[in-house]
Length: 151
Image (cartoon, rainbow, N blue to C red; front, top):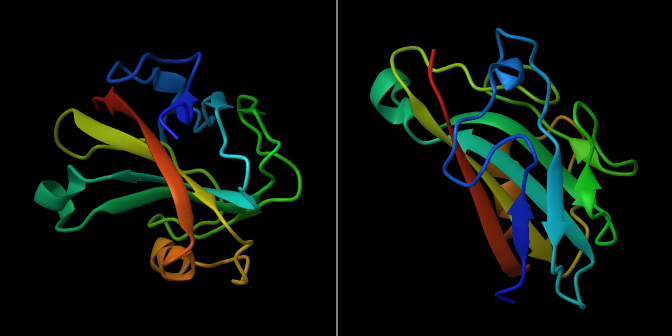
């Protein structure tokens, strides 16, 4: 399971996320590459959030929620999502990608990828909380990719 990874051609792990991926600067989702999906995976889920927002807005801010991603998917092209997956509601109140938008200083954004032993039976406009509840007890493996973004 240690070979399960999430990478991006747009930024290195822990590196700076390019401005065009920011909410107010184009809001283009970054390209992502998935490797080493465990054999018994039925679906993948991706959650992007900003734990640094806790200090600025009092909560972890949710930027992107996707689920029922086929386990055969190896990449997300820039500004697109794989077919047959579902997107949920962000803390911007919108469905789909909501790029980094730190209100105060540089924040760290975490893209968390989960390999699941089932597809999730949740509505298309579900929230991170609903996805996490659906994933409970069904996570085979997980990995993450972190990037930084400043206003």
